[in-house]
Amino acid sequence: MRYRLMHISDLHAGPPFNPRIAELVAQQAHDMQPDLLVISGDLVQRADFARQWRAITAYLATLPQPQLIVPGNHDVPLFNPVNRLFFSLSRYRRYISTNINPVFELPGLAVVGGNTAHGLTVDGGYLSREQQAAFEHIFAGFDQDTCKVAVMHHPPLETPGDRRNRAITNANAAIQMLDRCDVELVLCGHVHISYIGNTLDVRNDLRRGTIVCQSGTTTSRRGHGRERGLNSFNVIEIDRRTIRILQNLYQPNVGRFVPVAEHVYPRRTSGVDELPAAERVLEP
Ligand SMILES: [Fe+2]
Ligand SMILES: [Fe+2]
Image (cartoon, rainbow, N blue to C red; front, side, top):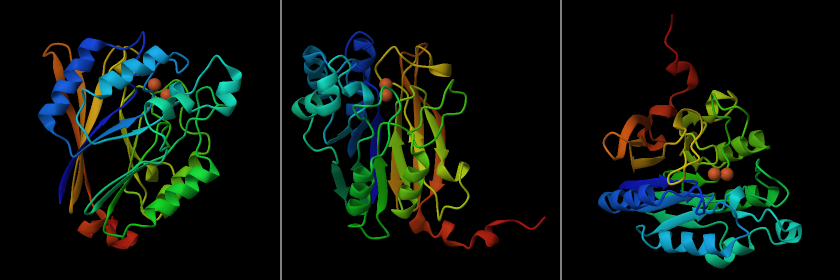
């Protein structure tokens, strides 16, 4: 097996959307021919406006298939409190998908999406008990050699250097759930800063931990921090031995997205992390 995923996020159709960058993303996506295109939420800027949903639907049609999409907090209506509380994902369901837990599988690979965006939250999301149970139920259907990848909009880790903590409010529960499910990699967005980390960075009581791969905003002008005004996406290559993540950043001087960092991790099936923890520590 050798698979390539392209991971984009925070498209924000509406005033912040940059059509020139979006067209370039489509071109580079087709050049790359990924096995799966993952889109980790915030498809529109303001979910209340049908024209933004029509615009993002038209844009998604220009991108390669298959696609796996999850909703973000901007995909929940803001202005109408009834819609916000009781029909928070009605527009998402109408224009994108009625399936909030999409599953994509190939031999040796399972990618599962979940929802962290809810009507009561303005910015921070959370993984409901039902959503955690859905992840556990779906991942339990795959054997231990399968590379399990979760997709959700809000990250399970705080982003270093961000002004405030934008991780999901029940990050501890989410991190433990991902570990219980043997999820090797989680793909997320929301912060508009790309970041690669590991849940073992914040908890040392996990069995194996989960790689966290966060994309910045791929097509909007709302990049934050060191990505202010910039756009990014990730490319992930998975085989039996390694997970390789290439962070791509738009470079104005060359007029395209180029890889700016590469992170390579051993797969669980490689046997590297099956050594007892003590044997991995070098004696002083
Ligand atoms: Fe966003
Ligand atoms: Fe967001």
